[in-house]
Amino acid sequence: EKDAENEAQKIHDKYIKKIDEMLADKEKEIMTV
Image (cartoon, rainbow, N blue to C red; front, side, top):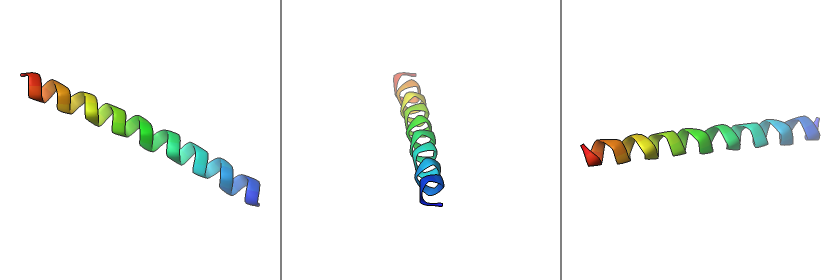
């Protein structure tokens, strides 16, 4: 059970990081326009 929780947390962190990067890229685009 603990291992499954750790896996879910890892996937969640990866997902959040990806979204953060995507948002950062969009912000950069908006600022350059």
